[in-house]
Length: 404
Image (cartoon, rainbow, N blue to C red; front, side, top):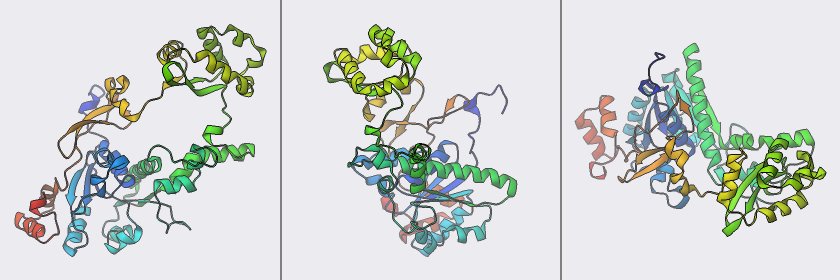
């Protein structure tokens, strides 16, 4: 790339890479979303009934539009011999295959790695599973299952009240690690000429999330307490209830910040108190310091406190509900949200990957596709005639004309 060339005009990093994904729910589609955002051509192979997340309600309603942008859709009946033949012809054009079904499901379809590598040793095959190979690999896993068995729910809730994290953290991160593995395999293929299987798993991902607490025990010999009951390493690191029942998170995470905080709020007495001289002193004094601070701040507005903290470079945060982030000025002004059209035609905004390349955010090139929106064009690229495509639609191999 010419040093004077604007990053927005340069090809995306994975341009020219074709990914065929057999995925559903969150983990597998996240991998494809990351690869697609980075420029890969991602072809989502769905059953004629469509990915089930297209129709989910409640907390699942956002799954499909978020994790299936920058993808093409092909509806294909893999339980038919003709459908499998189409899939194999499509895979023959791919650099990467991504899937998150049970191993025996892909084996029965003849779409497992051991089968496909015999045809194309350069193929990179990404499997998203509940567990990496071992004693648990036969189990059915969900994000919540591994949060419970992997210590994250224990750390998130209070003692006796395990609580899952407020997002599909293992599904999303598991898909991200699948994408990282795929990109590493692409780099290795450049050197070796050989593809390989990449495996990512929910349980092992969760273990990485709680590894800091495991290592805390290894270092101190003391089990980590759940986050609501932990001994904070900082004297002030809490949510405060203030005027008009508003809440705000405030942090003072060092001796210099403590001086700035006391001077900003006029707490000369606290700054002079020898019992509060150093951070560890303040940690030990929390039993009486925190009630005192809560009392002193209770009649101040959240906006007034936030303004003082921001002016003096102290850490703070409003307590924000997810839907309010659509109006966040930082996200709006920095390109963190992009317009996206839902399959039903409505336009919404969607958060982008939290990175920049050359100062540019990675945008939405393709809206979440209607079921089989690209089926005919893809099949024609594979050499199928219009008559063959029409016959396969009549035979139930492809989505029938009337359902398109």
